[in-house]
Length: 164
Image (cartoon, rainbow, N blue to C red; front, side, top):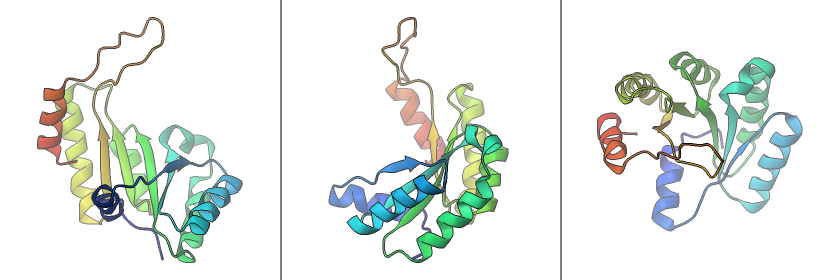
């Protein structure tokens, strides 16, 4: 099997009541561990590479290894850009062969986040790539953190206006 978009495996997981884990990888050993385990368990898996690691990793080589290994597997492998911070990074990931991208516009005003998310969705969906997006803040227990969480109404509006 080759790499697959996140859409259908996640729909199946929701329908049948199971989770698909995501593991962010940094090197060949991590890729081997994640994909070998997924194959032994015959379980779909999401392999992620975080945006902030692009400048310090040979991402193209990692993607090549992931693609090659996925072709030999019987289970679904989703290659995911995790916490992409820009439109340009999402497009770079799509060009490299990522099958899922996450745009993290959580630090932006909602209107700007919606605009960029929709631009990414337009291109990504045209080539069969699934899109996840982040809005606002989920809170934390760290001292000094404002803990102001995203409102339900903002989240509903975001989903309605982006269809993520």
